[in-house]
Image (cartoon, rainbow, N blue to C red; front, side, top):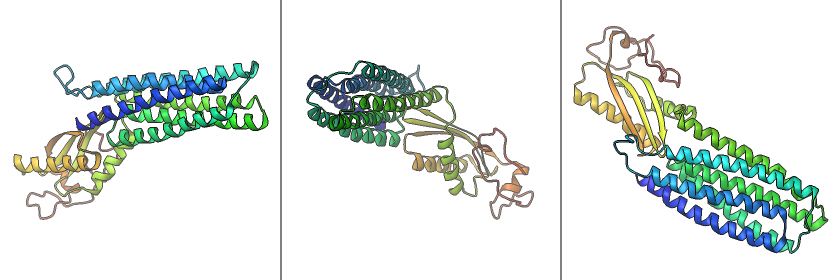
Length: 327
């Protein structure tokens, strides 16, 4: 819950910054009458709207679980990210439209040097805020914060593209260049929006996170204990800042309930140490069977029925299977 509250506070700051930067861009547009700067300001309206949407989603995600939502409210972040990704893509299309219109009907620009300075400052602030957002979001497993951060950074690149176009326009009077650069970076914005939508839909549909699962498998393989004979039926699901892990752990059949529970707790603690305290684990312990002896490395086992042959290395494929491993 502390991670969720931190995410909410960070998004509050991001939303305030978005509003302030939007005001600066509107001032720059009024001073210069540059359609490129107006385009950047229009894209910033998406930042403001998306900021408030993310803020609300993080407020919902921070709510404690209840009888209607036993896994918490974390999936609100996925919905928020999907909306934000859609808005980013729409903003990219609007920028392309405005840039083409500017090519056909060029606008007279004034006080361009002042406009370049103001817009450059917003680009720097956007980038720093975006990096901060992504760092906290990745640490707390918050898709909403990561999406906000990527949005701000994509806004930085589009702003820099506009600044470059305006600087060349200021130096050489190439009136077509700011529109051309705006179109190029609008395509980048659209791609970023698509990536965010794709990831949010994957979360809503509980799609397996292959990268996350590979990290888990490699870590547990390195930390493997003799009493962890087998691991299978592993599921990793993300709900906002919370990770849920379900699995079956095979331990020696003769361990009593307390001893088996110690092995389960040891496995859970290893996962939390690698992925943070916001991980919830549900581990079912199985007793080993006769065919398990050939893959069991436990030494001096008085109940061994056959010799150890080899250890089966855990992979993303075989730990997801619902079958106990055997040779």
